[in-house]
Image (cartoon, rainbow, N blue to C red):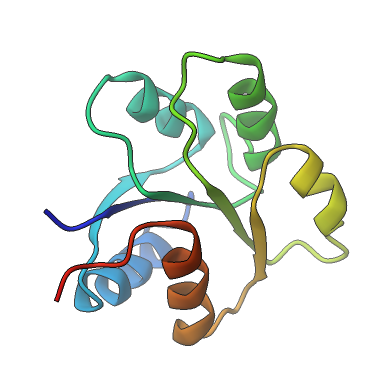
Length: 126
């Protein structure tokens, strides 16, 4: 079974593009349009994803709110989170203290995304 990446972004085109890229590299993908959907996915009790790719600016629940809620809910699986955002002036140290294991700036290259996912999740088979 291929490791799964949960793509959390409110932009449908971004989710689709990341999904195509990751599936072509051998990963399975799941998608969430905001932080609340991502938390629901993690709480659903299925196999946890290998990595969460998280945008910061989204409606309903932002990436910052997702990180804060995740830190408070010890029942959630310990899944590595990589922030993938175009927000200017992101403070990597603050995001790491909030639980992010990495930060990538949009627009990101395919190599940057695959490197971040591969270092934090299980590498795909084959």
